[in-house]
Length: 261
Image 1 (cartoon, rainbow, N blue to C red):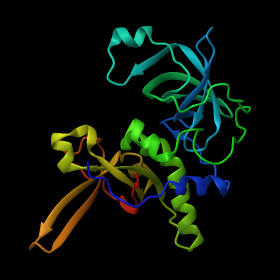
Image 2: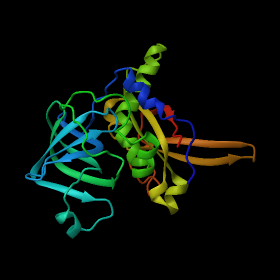
Image 3: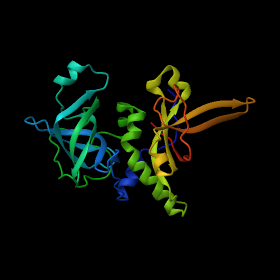
Image 4: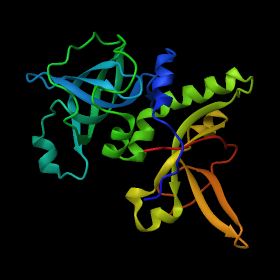
């Protein structure tokens, strides 16, 4: 798989060290959140758990709704019904924020499992910073290799978006438009290997209503007269642009975020 080179893992560490703590990605309602991290403890009685968010390194408390669903990546329905979360599960949590770093969970997607999370960890209170850097034992490259580029971009998108905006603000080049970070998807790779289509990330900017529709930036590679390599970047409303390529109007690409593994 070809990965765009460039982003150093220290980008996220530098962001955290500067005390820039991003808000989680929000859904259609302001109180809805999607957060990705690693489970550090589970309450065996009611299934509630605590997990460490990748992008901020903060501890979240998760309370399962009665109708909460657990999805396994590539799993079957019968496996999902029997599955019990354990420490070390890398999860994408969706639900409603009840208070600072407490979420009422409607869906948990289990992306992978890692043994890098040490046992017997002393947990801070929810909302209390746990120090700069990713979860203990998990470096940024390790996270990317474990859950894939697309899921990693989604996990770190709020932090990366805040970092880019602060970077531009420091140079008096900030935008007044809405921004967010989304994966870059290769049309060429997506046709044959959709699971490997994510090759990086991009920040897009524009009117809020339009930016909210953007799911990814599609990249179309071409060559002109054998000497010029062309890379067209198209903000799109789908995570499968190789099936249907539709540009979201009024939205531009304001930053390219490369990954170095």
